[in-house]
Image (tube, rainbow, N blue to C red; front, side, top):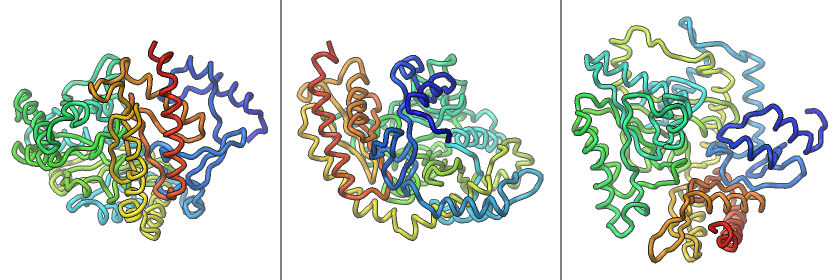
Length: 457
């Protein structure tokens, strides 16, 4: 890269670069932090400051930064076959091998893989695939896909419509037709005094109500993340997913499980579906599949849908130039090998996952903290205005954003979703780094508490 000062990089960034999910005016006034290198769980900016990455990039750098094995896997593949497409009745060895490996790892029956380049693309694929399945089965009227409020399935027009993020729906004129959303199973938000298992059954019942209101004959599928990540780290209460599964089976509705965040060890199993004993018909994968080193995603297709597509389908007129990109597949294969060699899934389940929740548990005594929740190496710390009255901050998000900014200024990346502080570090994080992350969050909470009189004035 050219030898420029930090100010020069910031000037170029503001002049020419439009960031995703960004207030451009505010960013131009403040200036970007320029990240120049990374290793393990740490980043370094252009001023030489080390930053602990408590979000694993965007929930994705599971095996940590600086893995030479992944660099070498990409270099070997690029020397041999840097790229070819999967159109024209062709295939490449890395795509075939990765599809086979994923079929072995995925929950039983998910034995076909369709490759894309992001979770958004994979969820777009699922929408078309599910509707094509029902059309081939003689039920083209089954087009409605039911999701959840604050569910996140991507930012393309179709994936955002399937998701339940209201701020995204407000831009661009609302959602596409044939998408419906029920309330999310957020026990702390909706029913903190109710027995969690009873609330889980009640929350699943919202799906039954929606199906009856829409008409079972029109509903194609229900979609959900095992744990809602970008929606505020919402861990489903006991029994919720079992009841969702029962309702889908009762009405012969397909079950889509979005594992973009939860997949590849994040919950202490290979997939969140295994953690919560879900049996999906079709499943979305991305992020941790390559540990974020190259863009790749996959749709894992169950036997029910796969059999129909193969036996009745004709041409599935959908795909991408870079579907199953051989270099991305080679990196994904090596990522899976690293996870198996280093037993990272077991490490999350038995070691660093429980330790993170133990350390965060002490924050329940902090005046700003209403709840600490999580599973594996993903956790949410909900900030609240008044614990006794169970009163949330208004406007929502202002306090969480201030706490996030304090964390960033204290050189630890912790995300704010509304007023929930979200942690999702690399699976290779050490107990000492967890201590540093939690201690920094504690200090940032104290700073945020001191800011409240002026912040909420």
